[in-house]
Image 1 (cartoon, rainbow, N blue to C red):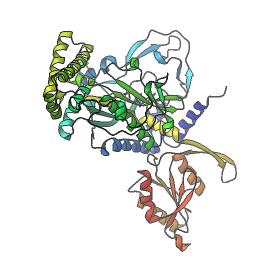
Image 2: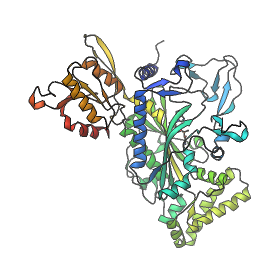
Image 3: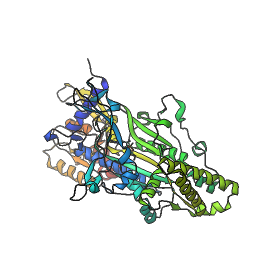
Image 4: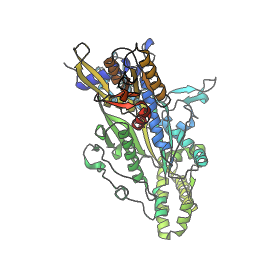
Length: 550
Ligand code: GAP
């Protein structure tokens, strides 16, 4: 039986990634290690570009987001407070016949032992009952390997942001609403890593925790919380408009943050910002979908969560999650560390005294109820929860509250796979000897392309051409990743760059040297996607390229 087209595409991508040095199996010479992947020369550049673009967009281009670079191993109490020690697990089962170990919710297909990118049916042997398997990698800090030395490799970068919230707030002169961004490695001992790099055991995340005022605080200050319809001057389809709970391809909208925004408007805003980011690096809206989690799918503390999905060859799957996480995380760290995580807000204090009694009572009650609900859910006894919630609600009059958070959390590796999938295209033409051949072109957006420009002398054995080409390379090199290539026919060199996803090639020929005086010191710029060529003066190349890669 012929393989489904998607699997064929996946096989081609995996083979291209290895052949061209995008992605290698980790520890390949020893047979590899399941769920771990290395990035080769082109992959490393691609990954670096993606992370840098995310960082620039999320922090440097904004006044209201700052960065953090925290350690991978942190105090184990962090993972107690976050809930990871107790609940970050997958249901695992063993097959008594084939001795395989699987996730109970994914037993119909497993990665092929010979080709992990390919899924195969699993054996029908008798299975054990599912048991919870914690996904955190455990280690020991210091020389003694006992309970007290247990630590974990972080399963997400987010928790360090919550743990350092107060330090960042105090040193950055930010005020709520503001965000803290972090990129870095995360580790999950996935029961069944699958779909190439899609579900790995070591991967990278790019996470933002954007802290906002609770709705009661916004209402006290602004009189009213803007409805999402008021906040959004655009057109986002209603999330519940189709049975699958998918909105289909996201629609563009315009959102400008306003003081009267509550969590819903901020949440929509970040969904839209993130989709714009993906568009800006070459993933069109048509390749993405929004999935609004149903109430029963949400984590108990979350008010809403939207997954941004990408149409991977193996199915439409999550690229990023954008969750409205209430004040759960900061509250947990406050309770576990005993350190206050609340903020003081002068605007709230002044507004509160001016509120009619009826209004302040109503807001007090709502805040109290939310706090109590959270505390009871966390196992605090009813009476104690009422007492603590009263204290928290009394804080409003003093301008105090625990911020809520919106969390856009993206995976670097999944994005790399999405970019490669989206860029992958084939053209069939003829080679130097007029034989039919199919070539691969990776149509990366110039912003993410690992190599921005190929620089080539027309002929390798003409020192004047080589000298000029090296001059062009050296002129561009301080500003971007360029690749000098003088080996083989010019057609072959273009083809190699097409396969690497290089958007532009600059060829230095005899006209560059002045054979046609009017073309002296110009080069041929050849475009990857359509093979079109233009002549540009060398002096203009840098500005021309920069305008296209920024
Ligand atoms: N702090 C929230 C959080 O970590 P998540 O949905 O578990 O949420 C966020 O992870 C993103 O991290 C996912 O959307 C995905 O892109 C990436 N990710 C999660 N697990 C992964 C894995 N095993 N391999 C590769 N990427 C993963």
